[in-house]
Image (cartoon, rainbow over all chains, first blue to last red; front, side, top):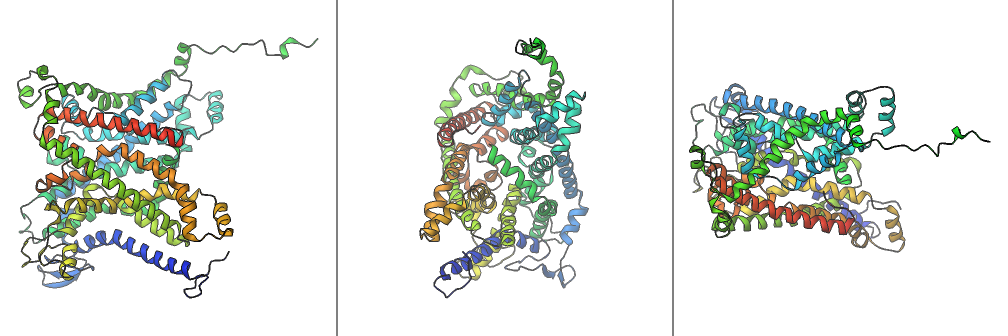
Length: 298
Length: 329
């Protein structure tokens, strides 16, 4: 049956009106998602103290006395102030390291878990799954970190994050999709387990590596709480921590630099989103693969 | 007579012994070592620390190097069961996560149904891309965005509108408020704002699983219903909703199991003025343990939380097995 768009003809009208309202509803919903972010973007480029309802990145700059579009004074501050750009570099470093370690541990673990004949493999998988439902808790974990001397070290943040049971199980479901005949053939040809892993398993799971790598990267970039508990020296804070710090700082320390506090805060929010915004449109399908895969298999 | 060698019936393939198999898989054990090290150090070693829950263990014991003092036995648990902040935290945990869970279910199902009605493939893709986006922002960023747009400004009297946030500016403009309100320090407003922030961030992402369920409904059902003269509403009510009911229930139960885990969204969003409505078990544990250095007592709170979680997960597992035939872990 052909659906016609007609708001008057009683045969098609109810459906057509529904389409109109549905479209309006989603336009409204998308606006509700985007406007808060867009408002912050605009405010980050307006160095005024009164933003009000302004939704364009244009404003009066008290430093030059002119109306300017895209005032980047707050971004210049972030790029030049070591207190702000160093945390950004720490974020990049920990994100790359956590993603790398996370993929290493997930792929190795998943590759071992698909060896059905291996003695002890059941125990390994129960040991992994058990951590999903029970753990020692915040304080005992903190005391372990203290005992092994990882307090105030970035390893205390990166190592626990690189072991994510959910991602490991997801990786295992991907690996289970590889035909076992490939492994057998390689084995007959004299390939070692490590050789099979590097030459067959990894090249065949590029999509899985991309998906799960993105999960690790997003989690590592967003990490905040581990820094609160384990990191003490300010030279090791990541950008999320610094951002939160800016918001908790009650004193208006930026009077001297002629940047409005909220302009700086807004700019910091935008800076922490930007790397993700760049990759999101290109990587959305990888995010989706991971989630639907998990939803079906779990 | 046929050559007996063509018939392999008499050949018994002996299953290799455990030792032989372990030898065959020796490299795999080597590969598992990095995983095992991280697992044992960061996940299993802390479990030994659960014994601190039955001890007095504060900064004093650490500086004096006496170690935890186990003489109090269950003292920490009697203390927490009679502690008002703990009761408040427990109540807040249940209230905040349960209301959030119900809101999540209603919003995500409704929006998934409406997304499913979008006929234009491009429109659908754009809507999905935009709705999923906030999920990928960190809680710190989400909280920061909400703090900025909800800001009351530097002067709460309203005479000076410096740094007054977007929402207050709208409400002032519309005449609903006559002076800016600081929503984040008002106990009455805080939970609502927190629910809105959670819905803003997670509703879109929550629709994915329902959309997957919706796409697997057979179109034949709708064709048959149309021939029988059922309208769109009736089709939704009698076909769509029953078809995804299983998914709705399973998602609900899975999330019910995680009800005690609410943490980071609160931790980055609350402040000392609204502890009465916002303090949850995990934030309370953090303040007692990491800030207050009362390790024994806070381990007890953590253990209490873990045990409640474990019971919830087991219950969910049983219910899940009843509904869909297999468990959640």
